[in-house]
Length: 187
Image (tube, rainbow, N blue to C red; front, side, top):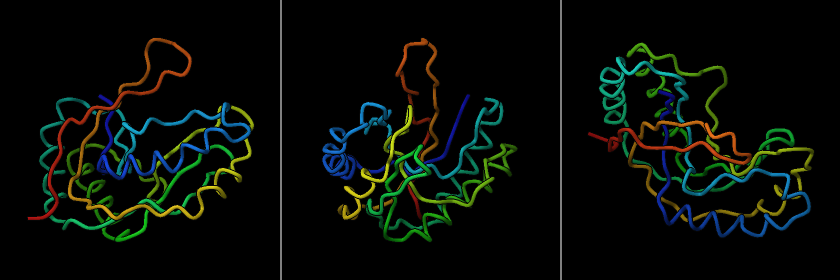
């Protein structure tokens, strides 16, 4: 099964961000963006890829330990950016060091369970809002959202999420996410 570990923001924070980005969908070129669905929004802590189900008990045990070693902390959506003109994202303000440390513990726990976590790049807290499906200049989108700063919310859970890739071949179909397990942060 294809898995990743994540922090899933609360509904109120998701709704606030969705309201903030709604006007972006009417900017020139917005039709060439594949917008992510608010129900799927998350901060990926560690991408685990295809994981043998036989490793799931050890993985969940290690992620439980990782979650309990980290205290809840506060974040807010803030800081928009782009990866070239391919991906538009929103970042986080607040205790990003705690989030980074949780990401490191999550990846280390996965490795101890025999699961290779994608660690090619340093952790960078971001939530993907849209991906370009053709040539689009994302700077106007970035500029429009530059001043957005959401309401603080508590990061208090670590989630293990299964990603089911589209199988129908229908253009525009998105992956489906389902939470396999989650753990409260702290002792």
